[in-house]
Structures are given as C-alpha cells and as structure tokens.
Image 1 (cartoon, rainbow, N blue to C red):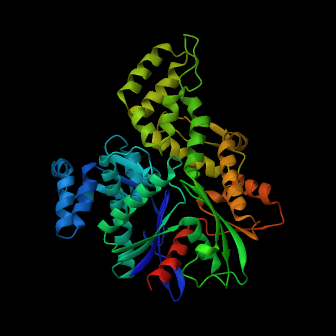
Image 2 (tube, helix red, strand yellow):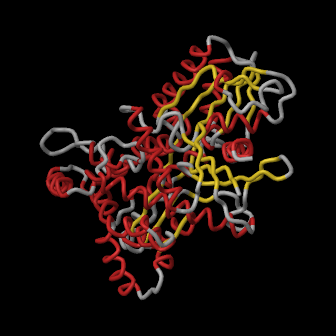
Image 3 (spheres, helix red, strand yellow):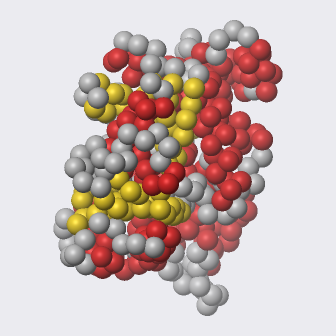
Length: 455
C-alpha cells in the first residue's frame, strides 16, 4: 500500500487515497497529527528500537555492528529501568512532551529533528544518530497508520522543503534526503519518492480548481518557508511530469520555530538577566542566552551545555549586578528547561495572534514568574524574519516572471496575522489569497502524488 508522509518539523501526518480523494490517517484517536517529538529514558533505546524491527539479514548485522556500543548500553539501561522492551522506554508526540516536562533532566528529549538533518559538518556518528531518531519516529507513525488501515504500507512519497539549510544547500539537501531515505527503508518503505512540500500543498488545492491558474504556493511550516509558482488546473492535473509547470521555487530555513525562538530570546530572556549590567561596566555576554533558546541549532545546544559555558556563568555570577535574574538562568540550564521556555514562547505567539498582550507562565522556573508580553513588541522583534519571508516570496515571483492569479497560503505558521500582513503588502487586494488546510494540505498533496506515481 502507498501513502503520502509529511515528516514535518512540528508535526507528522500520513495520507492515503480513498475513492479518488486524499484522506489523513488518524494516528492518536481521531487526531491525524503527531508532534515531531521523542523522549527516551536512555538515548541508546532509540538505536535498539530500530534494530529490533529490522528483518534478519545482512542489513541487520551491519546495523548491529555500527551501533554495537549503543546496543550494549541499551541492555544495561533496560535493567536499570526494569523494562523488558525498549519501546516501553520510548515516547512520541504529546506523550514525549509530557514525559519531558515531568522529568527534563532524567531522559533524552528531541524536538523537531528535521531541523538538524541538513546541518553542516555532521560527523558520521551524528548522521547515524539522526537516522535512528527519524526511523524511530517514522516507525511510530507507520505502525499507527497500519493499525488503522489494516494493511502494510510499503510505498511512500515523503515531503521535503526546497532547502533544508541555507549553507551549502546542495550538500545539505542531499545529506538530509539521504537520512530520510535510510530511515524510511529501515522501517519498511520499499519504495520512496520525494516531493517539494509547497508543491504537495498545491496539488491538494489543484483538485478543487475548475480553471487553469498561476498559483503561488506559500508554505510556512515549523522549520522552513517554501514558495513555488506553479501552473495548475484541469489542463495540468493529470500530467505525471510537471516540470514544465513549475515556474519558480525558493526556500529557506525560516519558519514558526524561529518566531518562537525570537520571542523567547528577545521577550523572555530579559527576565533571566540578558540585559543585566556587570560590575565591571561591561555588558552581559548574550551568547549563552541566545544559545539556550536556539533549540533548532545543534551547535548552539552543544555550546550551551559545554563546560566552558558553566565556567562563564560562574564568572558572571560574581560580576552581575542582578544575581537573582542570572540565578534563574542557571536554574533553567541545570534543569534543562530551555525547551520548555521556548514551548511557552510558542504558546505566547499563538495567543498574541488574537489578543494585544498575554502572560507567559514560567512557574516551572520560579513560582509566580509570568512576564507579560505585548503583540506590538512581538511584531517588532519578528521584523527580520518577516523580511526574509517577504524576500523569498518576491524571488519566487521574479523567477516566474509573472504575477500569480492566486496566492495559496498554507503551513501552521501561515495563520499568523503578521504573515497575512506581509502577503497583503506584496499583493494588495487585487490578487486572491486562499487559506488552505494549514496543517493537512501537505500530507494530503503527498497522498495525491503517491496515488499517481505508485498506481
């Protein structure tokens, strides 16, 4: 059986074709989405979970050889946690978030691993790790989908952004796609095709067009913004080779997560001492605070938890004129609460899309700590990100050498009124702007395409 698989930065979803229409597959009860999160009681459990489900043969032997140290650690970990199967020590989606919040320093938590797949300078050990993380998350979604469908899924069209990472894009894109392919093969996808996510979102929309149109698809997801100008409509929809219909593509790693991180850095970190003057007369170094909130940057996270940062914070504790604020920051670091702070920033971002201000509950750091943030302040600190998105849209139109007839707006972050203002500033009221299914259109479009390439 074939599916479309949206392995997203924020959420994962699968779609299949039934009676000619793409349908999202319920994964958790009636919920068709799973947060792109994983919590492991032991990091080694991730590798063993992948190894367990590999069929007997050379691939399983090679995998065991390359992960031998982790598999040995996993055996000891199972004894320590008194579990017989590592899957009892792995949690996904909302379960992963709940376990992380309950015990942030006791396990291993990863959010939005897709953000890291194109990172420059990854060593083979890191590539292996991300293959295992992606495979474990894919397997969780695949098993749940198969239970609902009552069939084994062997073919998948997987979505990918135009660019995973801005630096050395060609190498970055190949590395990320190779990781996704390796993970997909290990969980049982015998055939895998890839499709740009904005095009997938557009294909779902195309099924509802009755006239041929130039459609600018703007897909603003959790990790990336992708734009594609595509010829769509009845004259194009049945063609398997759509290369001549694609008039322009742009994409960059800027998405909803970046707005969350910017919110946390600029509006929340002042409560942790980022602006505190030092007794030496020098300003507070900002990099520890920036790195703490940059949860989608593997290098920043490594630096944040490095011993050099420990030593720097000890020095700053003696020099800061506001020790209570810096102590909050140190407490957050010791408890590994930086992911939770960014998660609260995300909630604040969502709240400010419909109200002028909101309080951010940081009571897990300190009782009654709830700074109030204003929508206007969030808009101001988001200016640079909005300019990047505007530039991507403008470049896609320039490549097409034509204005769109319709702007199709999709992706979880596209609901933001800040994004809506950018679109209207570029196109005014003359061009129709259509809001798609902000979370489901990519998966549905991947399902549509899977029905064409695997039929």
